[in-house]
Amino acid sequence: MPCPHYDIKIVQRSRRQSAVAAAAYQSGDRLFSEYDQRQKFYSEKQGIVHTEILLPDNAPPEYADRNTLWNAVEAVENQWNSQLARRFIMALPRELSREEQIRLMREYCQAQFVSKGMIADVAIHDKGDGNPHAHILLTLRPMDEHGHWLPKCRKEYVLDEHGQRIKMKNGQWKSRRVNTVDWNEQKYGEIWRHEWEVIQNRYLEAAGRQERVDLRSFERQGNPHAPQVHLGPSASAMERRGIQTNLGNLNRDIVSANRLFDSIHRVIRDLKNWLADLSEKMKEQSVREPEEQNLAEVLSAYMTLRHDGRSDWSRAGQTKAQVNDLKKMSAAIIFLQSHDITTVQKLGVHLDEARTTASGLRNQIRSNDRRITSIDAIIEAAAVVRELKPLHDQYMKIGWKSKKEKFAGEHADELHRFNRAFRLLKKYEVTLPLDVKPLRAEQAALKKSSADLTAQLEAVQSNLDELKQVRWCVRQVLPDALPTIIDGKRSVLEQLEANQRKAQQAQEQSQTRQRKQDKDHVQSI
Image (cartoon, rainbow, N blue to C red):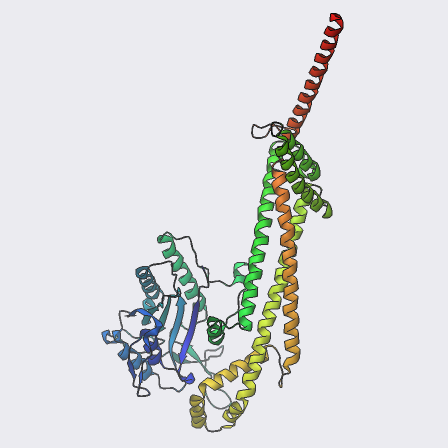
């Protein structure tokens, strides 16, 4: 299942966001916001194919109207930094029909959100470009049995060991904030994500599809692949117009390396399975252990058998077939000798080494890719901090709380961008001003290193292709090239011995006939 997207965000007034605007965007409706006295309408080019509002039993029926619902949400939130709604954007399996997608979304929302007391505003978008996805907008406040909004949290006094309230130095009682519902607990992000995976797979199975969704990261799945980097809207738009970007090129390199690693892993797995089956069959037949079987001798035995099996061919056919066999066998034997692979056991050891080498190279490439992405993020964050630092300094110098809140509301997006970029630089312990030349040089060196590592992976794959040819030759002989009867067939060595005995008997019969003819000739004289 390609790229199962699942994203959760909070609609925040501090970032100049509006729940009415979010509902208007995902539904395509023309809504009026009573909070800022503005009409909210967006183009219907999003490909909106389905919308509905799911209400819990205690919700007022009038909240089935989208405009009424989200204006009521904004009316009860009276803080400049209020959180208004929780917003989901999630990919839908395009392997399902439209009716199945709608039932899937409805069942998921009912089980995970509406049954807990949340109101869910649901919309499905599909432009016909193979990317059907759903938008869900959820209320954050609980309701009582009469449909009245309840507080999100309440104040609780902190008590000492004797059950008494604790007074602080400023004379206030020590208290803490306690949520009235647990919807905002971090664990639910993981729970909702997992349940979305489970219900999708259940619907795919019911539809008779083989595809399955796994929303875990590659690392948690134990997947050796390197994950692709997020392009973002700007890079995605440039790539759609045919303009190559650094992130796009990096993703193409990652895809190419992943395919190469898959090919190597698949060949090694097949060869290891073949050796395991071979060893098991040898043990069942109580014959010599695989390590005692000399691969070069087995290949030579196979050549002889092939030659003897063409005794009734024309001379030209025998010559052509023998030349082809010699080419294959010579290449196989030269490869085995150059890598000191003389027995089946050494072949298994070589495969283990090849797998270890390939995994090591892939891990180095993944490490390089992560660092390349980090460097791009650091450079971009440094540019954002440099651009918005004057604005942030101006905000920090404001002393009056009301004036500071007003300034924050007017410049919410810029301050959010600054804080996010500043946190990233702090995470990587970057000090400003930043000299980007060493980072660009490091990035170029990492790209060259990844190219060299990919070339080494290709060399590993080339060696494995040679081993595939060796396997093809050996499996024609082993386990038949053993001194026993296997699967009701005579072994190659036995056939060789039989052919030799037959040739010797024919020679003796010929000599006997010749002696008899000579004797008859003498008697006639």
